Picture 1 (tube, rainbow, N blue to C red):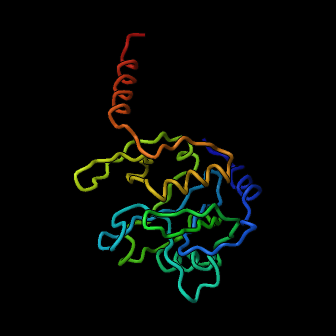
Picture 2: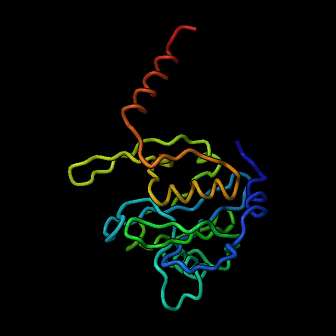
Picture 3: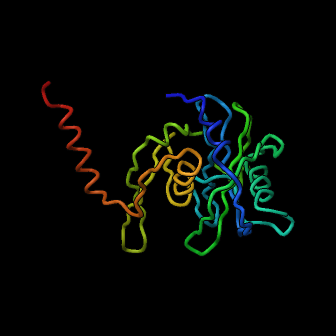
Length: 211
């Protein structure tokens, strides 16, 4: 269901943190200005040293020339997707995130025109795509299997636009829903895949029962 008020709500609710604390990296959550707003996402190239093939927001580590987290996020988005910084209306930020290696990441939120033309930087990005915010907010988490040495763990994920969104990117989306739209979404650290699959089977059987 389209919601023309989502962008207005986002602009009214989001602010910049009063206590300034520079992060080591920054990402840009770019949202299209339209009735059914969409969020810009990328799939990292398979040759990348870290998080190869994973879905991510445009972003990366700060350069010495970056004057702020905002500058870093806009520069990285321009380098990775050719998004002109002058096409971004920055409206606020989200709480700092920390990845497993201790790197601190600052999410910066901005509004961009709908139907904007972008070009992936081929050495870093395999695909650029847009996902509906409204659809993400109502999508239930699905288990995503990640193999660590001899152990399999199942993390919650969004599975949308033929992509799997999990980890830091998914956590930032959950933060966006909370601080930008007052949507509290349950997002466990890990998922018991067996329980979820059983629930799906039960639901299917219920649907097949005679009316």
